[in-house]
Image 1 (cartoon, rainbow, N blue to C red):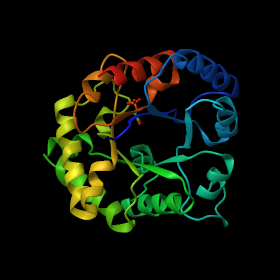
Image 2: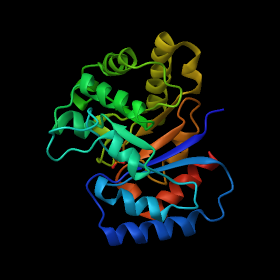
Image 3: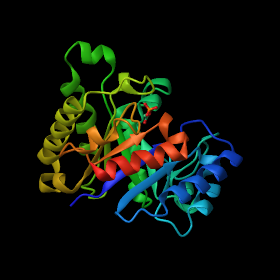
Length: 251
Ligand code: PGA
């Protein structure tokens, strides 16, 4: 049985003070939660140590939003998987569409990063998804196959890797995919994973991300292939994020 996963991507948001008050609220909201879920919060790198100390004694895990593909070296401004792991974080988002588009990361770069994350015992959350232009040209499945295959080719089988289907046009727009379409895309992803990694495909978690809120979380989480959600904007509010978790667990 795959665990339900709720991952928060804060992007370049939140101060130290806001981080403390977010986790205080989240701890209060989750106090009575008895169902098992994997909850991962990915703050900006500079807030990771504070986030780690805030989640001590809870089941909430912390992740980074990005890493470099080398462990150390002359890469001004970058942080490595080794550093993230040292800080106590356990996860790392790789290949978010904002990294692919704004920072021009190729699927090859994303794969190097995921590989380096795994080498350092960090679990990568690898994001893939099509742009509006590609969707309008009926290229969704082709893009999924292309981005996913690049990563599956470049990695050894990794049972605990997490994938996320994040259609670019749904990110931060308030317009989510239709749950049915997301389920189609994600079951296709599982089929592509099966082609490369065989039955391991059944144990790999695949999330949906793009304008998830407490109002629509259950509709996605009740689809058989959607194991969880990757939440951007709505994860900045601890009460709303907790509500997403609650709705998702009930689905
Ligand atoms: P959103 O972002 O929930 O604000 O659409 C999702 C993401 O970027 O992972």
